[in-house]
Image (tube, rainbow, N blue to C red):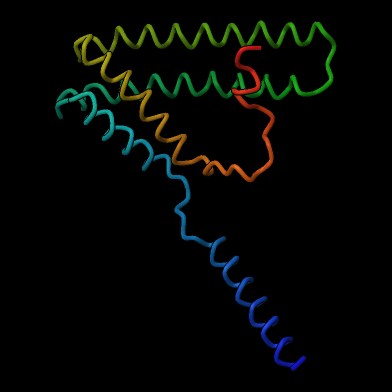
Length: 165
């Protein structure tokens, strides 16, 4: 009887370990910037109603703008990480000043490129593109973030804790 129970425990343990290994190698594709860019273009084209000609003229400008903004955001992240160290107060002031300056520069780039976009799109379509890009980013975040699990420990923020206080 003991042998049968030990055998069943061993089989169940091996089964559980194999299931965990199978779960780890769930054949998820690695992130591909080209694939992401293609999906973004398809999403924007569909949701903003761009024609093929408009897309051919618009997307190089969009990618140029996003590349410039990406460089600024990289610098912002670098500064914010630096702020995790224990620094003197005047260093935090410099970090905040530079991050704010980078945010303003980001908006200046955006404004400049909206005017460039207007050379190939109407303002109405630019508005639709902006809306589509916003929605695409939300969908991308949902796709890449782990599903919410109420059983996991609190991650330090709950809107309920902060509402009405």
